[in-house]
Image (cartoon, rainbow, N blue to C red; front, side, top):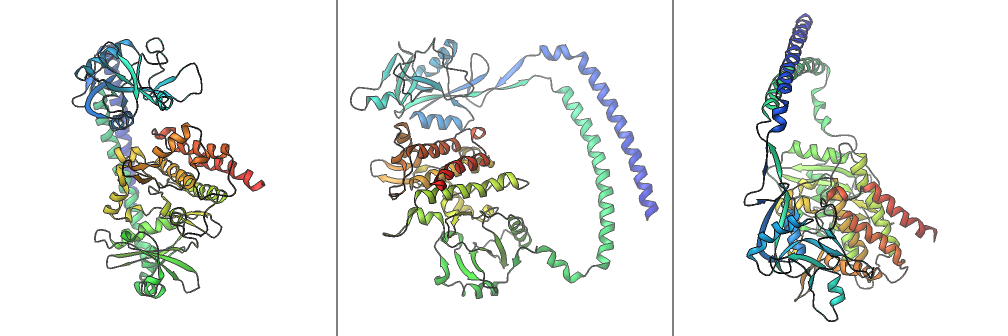
Length: 554
């Protein structure tokens, strides 16, 4: 058998050498042909492609579309971002003329991407485009104050003039300012996709030849590895104990419980042992191990789609994550489709209860406690992003998934277990009351893009919730309806009313306005619409630690 293996290996090496020579020869042929035709390829025209029903712009770099649905400037901008673009920018007279023609069917005007910035300067307003690729505001074409501002007069004019957005029309005054919450049609713009005609011929040939050679080489190497591994496995089976094979599934750090053990621990899942929480996920119960350690048993919804082996594999991965600010998993149980997760018991319960369900006369969180919660939680998320390989994205950071210990340190729950949440529950969490998206990042909601920066966005929303004591979305009154936490906070930020953002229950140990400003600035940095502009969690930890240290000195 050994001689046969050596003979096969020599044949494989010889075949690999021949394939490598063939690969080099094909590269030389393709290179010579591509060199002869290099001039022709450079001179071939480029064709811009746009989404369906969009129009290519005059400079052939952007595609435009007119939408007749009247809405506010911010909602128009959010709609354009679903296409990966922005409201149209007009940095030149040529672009302005093109946008005017698109808006010709609407006499009342259309939103474009210009907006005033809040400035304390008395010389006028500063303007910017929502499209970050537009180099700057063209002062020669657009003055600092628009030619015509439909803002009105009265007591609210100062606030209005600080919240002006740009609209365009085909009338005598092509550009004018308008209140951002006014309803108008709008024009979106996205970058056009340039495709070179017929210049992919040689690339296709090179890719096909290279792919065949690499696939053949990979198949041979894979066959050798499989043959060698199967030989070692046969030897190991002869000396191993078959009865011990099932124990390889259970690492030393966690245990597979039986359903009888869990019923004994939780007193048959009695209501007296049940913790307050989301009943739609099955409920959570307190219990105790044989050594006296107190644990929490989370009962998941019954599932017929996930097998026992897959469930144990996911729990094993999550159980390997050990950090002081991440809730540790003690074990699990799978019994005829019923799934249970056993994790460490955290004494003070979920953060959601301390923020929104404090009984009258009960203890509330002061400023130092809230800052400590935010800092310790940031430590736990930074561990998942920077210390774990590959990176772990939590995806479901919210107040109900943060547990507090006796010293009000934060412990993140549900790490690596988001796929166990039923689909209908995740759907309800995604679209919250009032049509808002709560903790979820825009790129995850609209394009299903999930990265560590999605967790950063969720942390920013939760940080503002910790500071203000307001839910991400809550009802205001019958006239306003549902209001997001940023719709409530942004006017206060623009007016520099930092202490008004604090939770009203914080009555003692109030921080300075400058400290609150730094925390709120960090919130808006975490919740930027462009994921790449959001900071890393390690940077957030550093910023929060700088704010905690002065409190410790005092």
